[in-house]
Length: 243
Image (cartoon, rainbow, N blue to C red; front, side, top):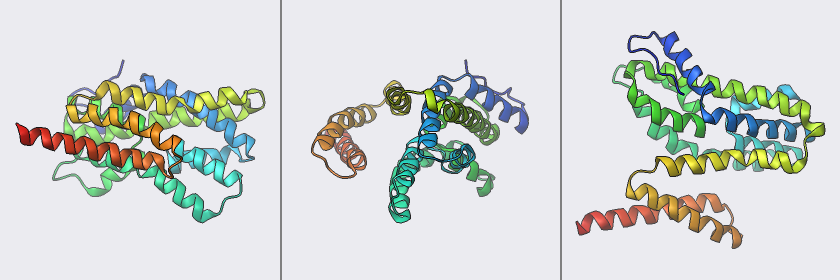
């Protein structure tokens, strides 16, 4: 069960409540399994466990880390790596745009939002959208930072574990563990989709994605989001106009 801070909790209390919410969330198990796989991947490509830890803190997105490790390990150029990791990270931008207004007030300094913006990832985003509306707005930044700290600490711990288990971890199991993140995101989006436009965009994405993948269209995930989201928005606007 997730733990919310008391209504009169201090910033430290809200931070600790956020960390406790992360450690008791189902996403912590998803992250743990995913980062065991990433730790094994980093080991197999010859990176140190401390490099893996630093990249987790700096990148803080499992798909982007897989891209980073794989491309560096296969000798791709830094320009190619930067473009690939940046394109992977674009998906987090609308998440941050949707989340940050829930935390800020006219009196909130901009720099207070820097850490939540950096920490915005699938796990933190889904849990924050679920929990933040239930608490006073003055506690939300500290709570989100605590939530992210809890998730990140579990990821770093799992990365260490996967790194030192790599010699005995079958490749198929490592691949299956890496697949936990997209599956958890899929289930969370399906569960939290309420409006017709959200369900339509979700359904269109499930249809468009495999078609583009089979057609071997470059940047298929990006085009899936653009096409699915645009079509869902067009249908929504038409529906509102007909009303």
